Amino acid sequence: MRDPAVLDLFPPGSSVGADGTLSVAGCCLDDLAEQFGTPVMVVAEDAVRARAREYLAAFRGRWPHTEVAFASKAFPCTAIQRLMSQEGLLLDVAGGGEIVTALAAGADPARMLLHGNAKTDEELELAVGNGIGLVVVDNFDDIDRLERIVEPGRRQACLVRVIPGVQAATHAAVATGHAGSKFGLLPADAEAAIARIRRSRVLRCDGVHTHVGSQLLDADQLAAAVAPIAELGAFDVYDFGGGLGARYTYADHPPTVDAYAQTMIDRARGLIPAGARIIVEPGRSMTAAAGCTVYRVTTVKQSGVVTHVAVDGGMGDNLEVSLYGQRFEAALVNRVGSGAGGETVRVVGRHCESGDTLIDGVALADPAVGDLLAVPVTGAYCYTMANQYNGARRIPVVFAADGRARLVVRRDTWADLLARDVAAEDG
Ligand code: PLP
Image (cartoon, rainbow, N blue to C red; front, side, top):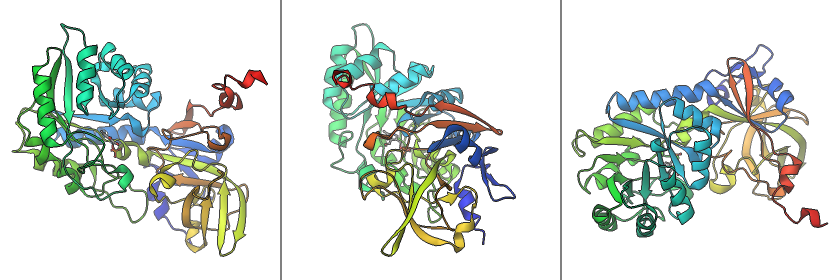
């Protein structure tokens, strides 16, 4: 029995051939696995571009003076950052490393915003030295540092990050809007920070920023942060952060971008000045659905009542499961949708942790060694959290479009594993 629902989780434009084999952006995943090896992350390039345009249209159609900033942390490789810049998005960069990749992508530093709750002198020097458009001040130490770093005669534009006091209905690890959050300042402290910046001879306060959390499936929760920052006064810029959830499972029903924009702008109208600039910073909802990861099954075994289907990747390429219990679905590449009648198995990774489970309970029809398994919705926060645990070689990223595939990030080599190990020669 075919269960077409799984296809809906793969990037828009994915299809299943007559032989039951899955293609993404016109590229058969079987062929991509052959060409690039496994595991491999496949990104449907046109799906990312379409999402960027959807965001711009949804917000600008309702509030023309909106900028959409891609939250680079969701996928900070040059190919993605370049694509976002080409589509006219700003880049939100969290820390020096994302500035470096954004610059290498050819992005205009004036169209970047720097975040971080623990920015160092080095990072702020990099930001100021390269002319980053906006620095989002998270604490008073940011102000001290900037006042030392920005040369007299220049003015660094800043936003002040405010804790909106919103308890988001999401995993604790990605909730950021509650009192007690390590990000931003409580409203009274934010007022003091704004006043200090206004007195500074080298800084300029352009506005306020907030971010409620990530993987939110209720737009009202995101909009709940609008009033607390609007109450801080009239500014040129109000940055509402990111947070819109992605559809990882059949049970997830995130609002459309249109519905999200409608809710945010409805809430903002009347609360913020008509001429103000709104910024939103989507990450997950921009890229997650455009990506999928293809693994090779390495072993299938029974242990007690559970069938373990082990693949050649795991928490080295997808930390979302062990960090915040994110649920994923999967399909066998050559038998897509035939899982409905299959046995419920546990898909596990190759790493030395019992927590290295990719999917605890998914129906797969007769999974066997050598099968290809595709996990959809891995296009956000997987590449960026990749690690080399157990000597894993970080996996490649392939852009697929119109039946053609191109490598944009290569797989680590064995030599890469030794590249930083300066004592390696001592032996
Ligand atoms: N903006 C800020 C300040 C963030 O901290 C984050 C994520 O942590 C984002 C935007 C992006 O959030 P999301 O990927 O949920 O859209």
